[in-house]
Amino acid sequence: MSIVLVPLAVLMGLVTYPFRALPLLAPGFERLPEQAKLYLRLVGPSVLAALAAVNTMVGKSDAGVVGFRIGWEWLAVGLCIAVVGLRRSLLIGLVLAAGSIAILRTLGVATMP
Amino acid sequence: MVSTMAVPAQPAPGSMSVADSRRRLLLDSLGIMVSAGGFGLVYGLSARAAGFSPLEAGAMSVIVFAGASQFVAVGYVLGGISWLAIVLLTAFLNARHMLYAAALAPYLADTPRPMRAAMAHVLTDEAFALAIAHFRRIGRADVRGYWLGAIISTFIPWNVATLVGVTIGGSIPDPARFGLDVIFPAAMGGLAVGLITGRRELVAAIAGAVIAVAVGLAWDPAAGIIAGGVIGPFVGMAVRPRGAEQHERALGQFPQRAEPAESDPEAGLP
Image (cartoon, rainbow over all chains, first blue to last red):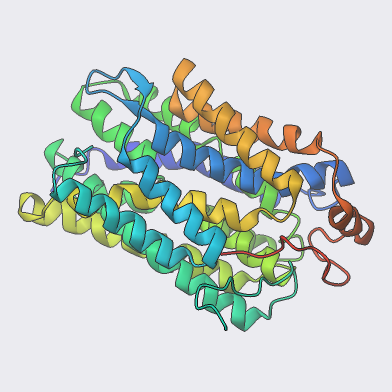
């Protein structure tokens, strides 16, 4: 069994780990000024919304060209967000999101990604 | 008449017991577990198609444990791109994890350093989303809860699915047929909604999403996520807080509040 790419995995891990660890391990990070703490409190909703939006609205073609994506996936993600907002249940939201898009694809209404 | 569609009572940040919050954490983890399994399967299949051995694909999932960069690595290896380019792009794609660690750091200040070092390795999008929601519900850190979320929701499903994909291969149906590809953005959006406890969070989330899409379209999706995550909070900070949030600030509640802000009507998590 080939292990040629294992060193590549190690190198990729070596450049990833500092981003995850430095703020957790740097001394004094917990004694931040109030403005910095407020900023960090807002990072959560901001970055999660960014992840949701980019993964729903921005797509790459097979040729690697980035473009605005419009599709039924918007509805599925919006449905989940609405369910969480109204019912506070992420699980139900996810089941409805995946279920709705699966049905639409089975019916041929929505295209496969 | 009591409506069955009534919105459940929303706990104020810091007001939920650890046990109750862990139960919610595990429930939230279920959907993310399916998503991680689906993506891990696709990664395993892609790695197999690119000629990775199970050991190579598995090593990448265990050591790197970062989906987007692993997919890119598969594509680049297949295209014969240099390792240097792959490593540089990995650093670029995973730079957003620094934001996650910075946001969690105040909560984990009293956690032993070796433990923090270990926790950092499994700090993914999903682990961050679950952990920050859990910590805010209980108003402090919970190391066991962090591990529950990170390991059960993502690490185990991702690695098991990688091995299944790379070994069993083409006999598995496309996960997109079951809508699994929308679970990740839906989960991130849902968890973002759960973190919105006031006007500032709402504005930060909207700004983050808009900036991310704009930069993603103009430059690169990964750059968009970083830009949205970095600039969005500044936009939120520029918004004038409402009465409840001013009350929160007066209590100095981040990360441990003195008492729950019971007057905050928007408090609560998914």
